[in-house]
Length: 168
Image (cartoon, rainbow, N blue to C red; front, side):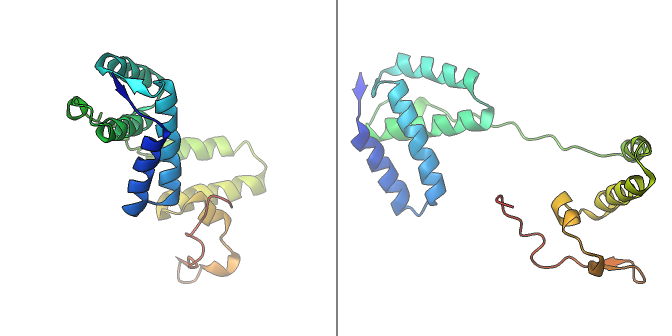
């Protein structure tokens, strides 16, 4: 049986701070380390780890599951558990690309015909512009009439447009 305490968690966090990890990353990792520690009551053996990993696998999405296993390995490494090297990180499946085909756009535009005429033309313009230019919806939303040069068929993207933060 292997034991640790909150001081062990704090040592791991200190090592992360010294390595230059971001405050947000450290905060999330510390939260996971504390949850793991509390779930395991600050003690474990190999059998406990196997049961806990299977519980994590059922509970979380692959990317989150991987983060928990990584943090579990950090704890086990810190307490010098001999089976830490046997614990392998799970692979996260790659996201599949969504391919939008012309028939999808036609169907969407066809559905938009149910709207009033002015809303229909606005939505059709937005659909065609985004699908052919790579504009993000927020960039389209922030687009001003002055940004469009109809004669030269050009749209100017202002420097501040793509730098969208989550608070907006």
